[in-house]
Length: 123
Ligand SMILES: [Zn+2]
Image (cartoon, rainbow, N blue to C red; front, side, top):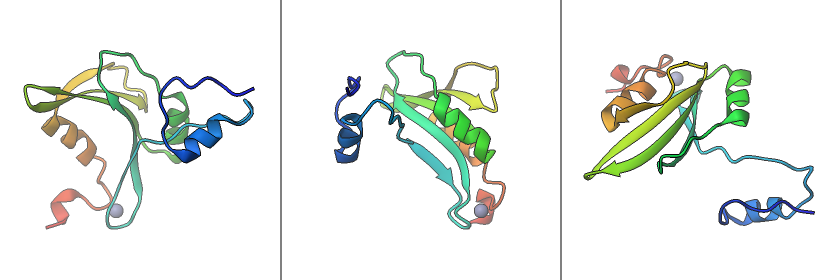
């Protein structure tokens, strides 16, 4: 018996997977920040449109632990023509809860992970 889908189709592979036996469970990974120079993965991000929901990322958090890279949830919304982000770091767990950030502030969070080839070295 296959599971009921909570959301609409996410493509052919997703449709096939959901039609299989319940023993197969999977997530799709929304976003991997990586270094353009050495291809090192820098952070994992679960993304969604912000509709005021709570959101967890338990499997992605475990992947981040295994890879020793940070995991964030980033919910985005448009506010008067500007993109705002409601974000929470789930690995390493920050304890800070949800933070409301501007586009520039969220960029700065992600840029801090560019320790192998810092952004200031690119020009
Ligand atoms: Zn690098």
